[in-house]
Length: 206
Image 1 (cartoon, rainbow, N blue to C red):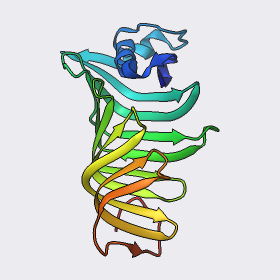
Image 2: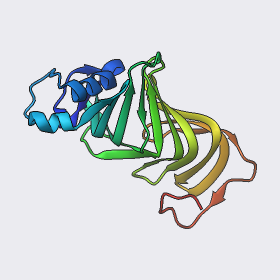
Image 3: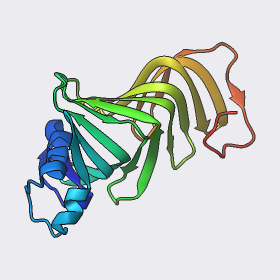
């Protein structure tokens, strides 16, 4: 996977170091590719506070085999320079758009908090986590992991899943799903929790 920081025109960054390089770019204005941004504008994107590199209004593209597969957006990104696990934190929400080959959005993710541990190659998301696709399939949970090695979501916590065909809502504990939600497996469905519903709109479980 390859990542690039959109407001810095960065390209060809290996997945496991993308956030480290992105934050280093913002704080010290190191150029890995041609950059047409005004230098003062680029410096304004980030700063260093103690042992933390801080990036603001961050947009990061993810690509696989030269194809853009996702876009991460966050108002605030913190890189903890002294952390042994090389953690990058998104403390003020994280949004992700997942794309098809044609760059059409296939699914979306939202969480109020997220962090990425480079050593584990996983993103941890918590607080009102929502994932949904263009068909209307939706997952709500309090916390989950996004495994970058497998491109899968998973948790062992309570989960609510809405499916589009037939329109139904299922409650359970724990799930595994791919990024476009075409394959969702609830680990422990609650007995008699399968309910046909009349309206599949909205992002808040009823």
